Image (cartoon, rainbow, N blue to C red; front, side):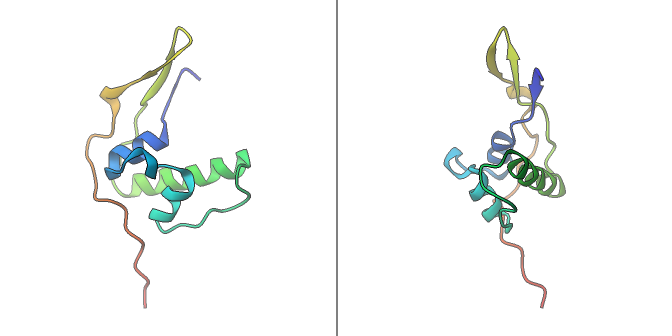
Length: 96
């Protein structure tokens, strides 16, 4: 892969939160989700990241490539950051 979407960057840009709030467990918590599976399991981490991406899409995020490799170096692709921001994620309200 030479181009990809860094969900941590997209999450931070979209929800307007600082980088220290873009750890996987914190992102899930802020979205009202629990971590599914075993921490640091590649498969479980991937599934949880996918759940975050789905939620971001539901909230209106336009996910775009934001990182790429060029000549062996990581390059940030700033022009494809999410177009519109959203308010910080809120815990889902219980349906009583």
